[in-house]
Length: 118
Image 1 (cartoon, rainbow, N blue to C red):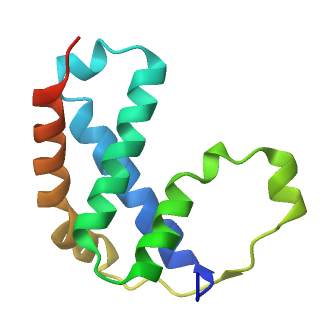
Image 2: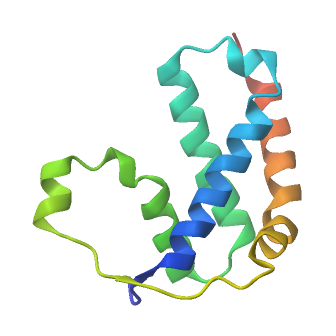
């Protein structure tokens, strides 16, 4: 990875995660999955959405690592603390994220839900 994690990256990853969750929770098939299956599906969809919406490999890598950061044990986080560059969020940040991700999230969730066997 060639660049540092920024506060905007964290906000972007949170946006993706939250909107994937919102879209998935609308579906009964998803709600019938066990927690481990849900978590795996959420991760997979978030990573797929990141791949589809971003061209720059550094952006993809940093967003994917932020999405999966919850899996890193606390002891590892303490050993390698991340330096986060704080950037001011533009006033239209959510609108920018909606334009960039909303359709991709909706299409990806719809496609993945069709493939689910519950």
